[in-house]
Amino acid sequence: MVLKERIEEYLKHSLGVPLRLLSVKELGLESEQEEEIKGFGYGKPYFVTFETAEGERKEVVISSLKGDGFGHEYPSDRAQILIWQYRAFNSLPGHVKALDVGYFTNDGRLVSTRDAVEYFIVCEKVEGEEYVHDLERLRDGARLREEDEARASALASYLAYIHSHRRGDAKLYIRRIRELLGHSECIFGLTDSYPSESEFITQAELKEIEELCIGWRWKLKSKTNRLCMVHGDFHPWNVIFHTHTGTDFTLLDRSRGEWGEAADDITAMTINYLFFGLLKTDGAVIDADFKRLYELFFDVYLAKTNDYELLEVLQPFYAFRGLVVASPIWYPNISMATRKKLFNFIKNVLQTEEFNYRDLDGYLD
Image (cartoon, helix red, strand yellow):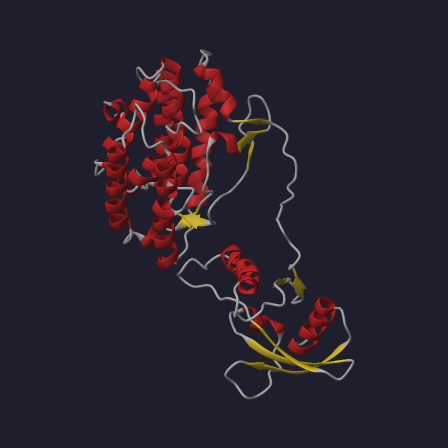
């Protein structure tokens, strides 16, 4: 079905009245377009003229957004803007009215979503247990099993595999590093969520952390060749092991984009070995079993990837993940000693040019 037929079908369904499409022209061009629908979804606005059954002639503009380097790379970025525009255009006096908002299907149909209020997702159910239960068991005094080491190794191996998939898109890498600081779920959003007064961190110290992270952003911007496939939120609550002792797992809740920096995934998991290792000793030192898992994770990953540059770029990602586990919102009941150790870790790592994962205790002083 060509462009005109698709648009006519959509308008009949959207407006709920019989009509006849007269012309479809790309804005700025005089001639009518007879191209396939594929070209329509790539940011070109089209001027559409149709006639109702009563003979009334009407004209509308149908447009979409194209991906670019300004936060429009993902289809969800573009959907967010268009959904917002549909409401916002119609609430401003004097603004051109939006008549509908919709999406293109895989087979080229135009479908309305104007009545949508909230969106949802449906996923399959996964049988098993969250990986965090293993860490809680060790925190509570259970012995380190061979299966614990096997699972840490399996997780590191999985990341080595997905991170081997690279993509050449410098602007997207720069965006992901920018979002590490400025996204509301990341560093600036976290520092804003901390109380204005607390016993374990001052506003001046949070500002210092932010400033150090800005310096790291400028260091990382040139490393665009590192863009790779990522999970984006690879922590123990998002890993489901299918059996009590096996290494077969399924992941949940991929976040913030398909491509990014490998350090994001590495730090998201390993900060939890550090965190639970401090919880076990109430902030005194890193427990030996958790230190073993921490070092094993890095050993396996680096052996499989040979990506030792990772140790020169993970610093601001550890700041992000450290701000999460030190947060009084997410973890209100941890000890003062543990929080202080976590902030020592954040500040010391941010001032380290090359991270030494075998000197974990040194970053806690």
